[in-house]
Amino acid sequence: MITALRFDEGRLEVLDQTLLPDEERWIELDSATAAADAIRRLAVRGAPMIGITAAYALALEDPARFAAAAAELRDARPTAVNLAWAVDRMLAAGPERALAEAHAIHDEQEGANAAIGRHGADLLAGAQRVLTHCNTGTLACGAGGGTALAVVAELAARGPVEVLACETRPLLQGARLTVWELARLGIPHALCVDGAAAGLIARGEIDAVVVGADRVAANGDVANKVGTYAHALAAQAAGIPFVVAVPVSTLDAGTATGADIVIEERDADEVRRVGGRLVTVEGTPVRNPAFDVTPAALVTAVVTERGVMHPVAR
Ligand code: MRU
Picture 1: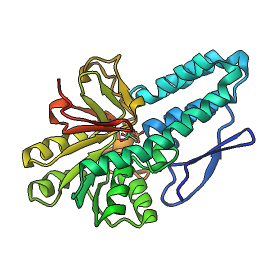
Picture 2: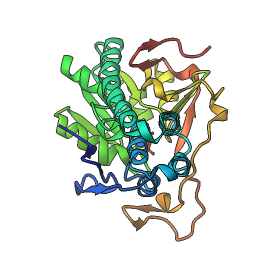
Picture 3: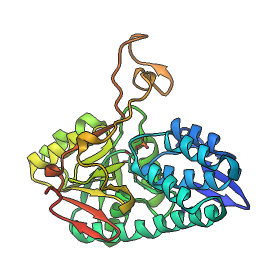
Picture 4: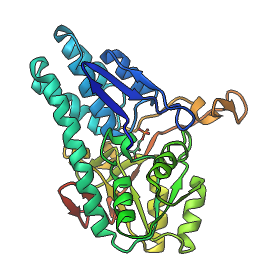
């Protein structure tokens, strides 16, 4: 079984996702500062997972530092609403009930994943060739199979499935993490560069696209890992479903549209380098938005643990 986070006898440990698939190294996060650093450098990543990690890290904090630690964690990454949502739940619980609340956030996510998998597989019954982007499995959710990858796993449990995993430049979450999870789950898969996806979809090689999200705005616009929007355009052009699988904690009624979502811009060297090696001219100016926004009109359905929202656009 895959696990990405453990909390035992007051010790919070996470699998360092920057090192996968080469090395499975667990690191201890003994403070909010350590957790915020791990979240910023993507040792811990994926919208639900960063919320769960922040919750446990807050439960470890000195009560006198609780509010300051909450602010530090909340600011670690701006786009995934699950982080702010989890921090707000912890603030409402307060230091006395912090550990129980962190466990509740973790357990709820695990339950949500299973339901998301079932609803998504019901919706996509018969789809055999599924394309996904970034990593939305247990690594991204802390427990229980993930979101879009839970849908894929449930489809695979019900019948033959082959996954096309996009590598997800710049940090290769698809190549490094999704492929690692699919191999462990024994689900047939192939890896492609992000730029290959549209052509393969157009050639009729894909039945459905399933992705996760970092934030779904009130109008149904979806922020997810950069490159997602291009897959949605290709899916629409080919007339295949583009499905977004998320826990309800990713739905953000407080953000009106995708234009209101803050898109994190990350360090230029993530683009200039691959695996630490410079692949362009030193100092080349770079744009590195970590996410893009897919308009609701391109989203066939949003699947949550509560069921399927379809149509998405209002
Ligand atoms: O920058 P990352 O790796 O945290 O980005 C993650 C994604 O974009 C995922 O698709 C999203 O968080 C959903 S995880 C279930």
